[in-house]
Length: 189
Image 1 (tube, rainbow, N blue to C red):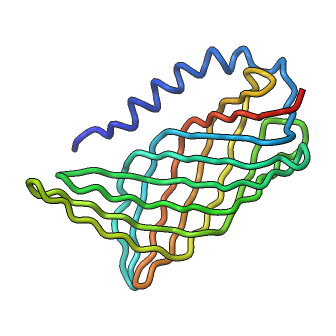
Image 2 (image 1 turned 90 degrees about the vertical axis):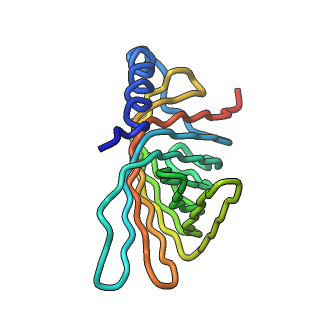
Image 3 (image 1 turned 90 degrees about the horizontal axis):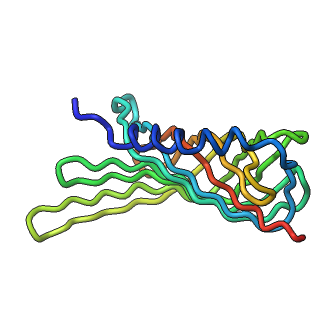
C-alpha cells in the first residue's frame, strides 16, 4: 500500500499550529464583518450506485470559505470543500460548493456549519500527451464542525471536519475531510 501524501502534510501543519494554539486564548472570539477561511488536510471518499458502493479511498482535502458574520453567532458563507485522489495518471475530485450558514454557540471557538448547493464529480486521465476529462454536477450538501483558537484579534486556527454529499444522475458520492482551518476576520476597528 502506498502511503498517502496528505497524512505527512497534515502532521506538519498540526505541528506548526501547536505553538500558535498555545498562545491563543488571550483574544476574544469576536465575529463581525467579512471573513475568509481555508482548510487543508486529508479525507476519505466513496461512490455509491444502486445496490452497491465502493470501498473508502484516502486522498487530499481542501476547503475555501468566504462570507459575512451578521452577528457574533451567525455568518453566511459561500463554502466549498473537495476531496482529491491521483493515482496512475488519473485524478478524481469530489466537491461541494454551497451557500452555508455558520453557527457559533456561546463565546467559545466552536463552529457548526451546514449548506446546500452544487456537488460535482470530476475525472481527468492522461495518456501520453493527451488528457481526457469529464465532469458531472448535481445536488450537493455539506455539514461540518470546527474549533477556532484565536491567535490574533483577526486570525484563528484550529481543527475542522467537513462532510460532503453529492447526488448525480446514476450514483452519489460522499467525502469526509479532516484538517486544519485558517480563518481571517476582517473586523472593523
